Structure formats: C-alpha cells, structure tokens
Image (cartoon, rainbow, N blue to C red; front, side):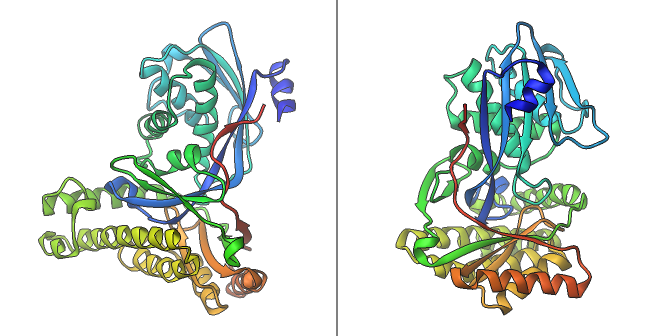
Amino acid sequence: MTGGFVATFGHEPDGVWAAPGRVNIIGEFTDYNDGFVLPMALDAVTRAAVSRRGDDVVVVASSSQPSDADPVVSARLGDLAPGEGRGWSDYVLGVAWAIAESGHDLGGVEVFVDSEVPIGAGLSSSAALECSFGLALRDLFAPELSLGELAQLTKRAENEFVGVPSGIMDQTASLLCRAGHAMLLDTRSGAIDQLGFDLAGAGLALLVIDTSVRRQLAHSAYADRRRACEAAAAAIGVPALRDATLSDLARVPDEVARRRARHVITEDARVLAAAQLLRSGDLAAVGPLLSASHRSLRVDFEVSCAELDLAVETALAEGALGARMIGGGFGGCVIALVGAAQAPSVAEAVRRAFAGAGFLAPVVFAATPAAGAHRLA
C-alpha cells in the first residue's frame, strides 16, 4: 500500500487508514425513509495512504481507477464545488469539501487509495472510500470530530458533491460497526445498538453471492424509488414512511407509490424482528425474514433481476435458511444464511445454476462481521 504512495509522490505517507465495505443483513431502502437497518462490516477494506502538504491542494491517486481516468487528480480546496463531474475522485474530493464546508481548517494532502471492496456490487465501495479518507482527514486536521459527525459529512459528500441521493447507513456502518456484531441503526435518531452476530458459534455461515452483474440502471431507479417513497409519505401526511402503517396505504392514490411504501413499512418491521432474534441468540430464525425481504424487493419495490432471483431460488432449494438481494438492485449481490456445513454445496449449486442459465460466473464467499474504520499505520 505504501509502495504505491511512495511511487506516486516520492516519499512516505503520514499514515494509512482503512474502512470496510458492508453487508446489509436486512433493511433495504429504509434508511432514507427514516427507518431501521441492520448492517455489518466486511473484512474487505479500502485503504487510504495520506500525507499533509504545505499548501491547500488535494492530490488524489489510486491503484484501481478506471483505465480511462486521469491517474492523478488535483484541486485546490477553495476551488472544490459540487457538480463538476471529475469521476471516481469526486468521492475523495467531496469528503474534503464537506469537512471544509463544515468549518474545519483543512490543509492540502496527497492521498493514494486502493481497495478490496468490489465496485458496483452493493457492498458500499463508495462509503469505504469516503470513510477511509474521511478518517484520515479527521485524525490529521479535525480530531474533535466524532465518528457520527464524520458519517454525516461523508454522506453529505456523496449526496451533494457526487450527486447520489443515498441514506446514512453506509457511512455509519463503515465507520462504526464492531467485529463480531451487527449494528441496528435507527436512521432518524442515530441511535445504535451493537448486537452479537456470532455466526460460527451458531453453526452458520453468511454467504455473499456476487452475481457479477453491474447495471447503471440502479442509479436512476434508486432516485425514482426515493421520489415514490416521498410522494407516498406526503399523501399519507407523515414526515417519512417510518411513521406510516399498512392501514395508511389506502390514502396513497398512486398504485406504484403504494407498493413502494408497502415494502418500506414491512421491511422496517422485518429489521426490528431480526434484531430481536439476534438479542435472543436465535440467528437461524433470521433466515425466513431474509426471504420475505427478497419477495418484497422483487414484487413491491421491483429492483431485482433474473440473476438475483436465480441466486436466491437456488440457495433456498439447496437448503439455505433464507436469502435475499442486497444493495440498489438490478445486479450486485445476494446474501444467503446457511448452515456452515452446507456452505460449499450451496455455493456450488449457485455456480452450476448460473452456468446452466448462461449467466456470468458468480463470485461466492463467506462474510464475517468485521471492525469499522481504523488507522493501520
């Protein structure tokens, strides 16, 4: 990691920081509706090697930028503004912009990033990038910032600087998850409950099935569904769908918005039910909630696709306790809760099913609840 920094900038960095991707166990599209989510951090991380400069220039390089992107991007802090469309580097520059905009006195930096988090898979590679660099800036320039405040600022970078209308879950999970735990997050209040999620101790495994499908449609569909949720909440007369009940849906005149809202209302209930099961230590009973979540995402929210559905159906047919798509949809990943002894056979069954359907080969791995963002060196 430091070798890439030294090769690019000619000297050692001041430090190296890491932030993980995340798997959202349950609670899809609830975060921007003021609802509940239950993510865990992955052990796949994005690393940022960072060094202070003597001026106000931010210089960004990466080992994994797109082949058609500039290998090194630089901008003065005072010149940073949303909407300029620099590409992948906006996720880094936007964090500097958001922290500076909040009144903190930043200086220029050199940053070199690399990542193990798959891009576009619904594992929050963007938040891992934002949070690794954001934690570096906090430690170097603004140690008074709490991790909760940093989560809000990195979310602002993604929303306003990059232009992606995401909720707060991804950044909070990347910064604040604990190893061996799932994090119940109330996205309205910010309250966090760290719940033990000892998969191995329960004789279970959580498989992540990356379908290898990356579809840009997910970005526009995300915005469309957020607007539908906001319209439904307005029709019901509540601040957000977190405050609505199923009986309120009769007040939503648009049938599509009604179905979108039904997913959110029932998904919030599934998150709280899953959290209670974790508190009681009954991890296996979370499985049916995962499957119910997928049905809701497929039918009411309409964000699944053939590859995601095949992965879920195959995992369940092979004996998985539950399975569902995660992330923005139209591709990306499925998670499957399985008995530890069944994990190899479930993975192999999914690979065979994809080959038989002529789909891209999936990548399957077991996820372990890992630690949130931290300094490596």
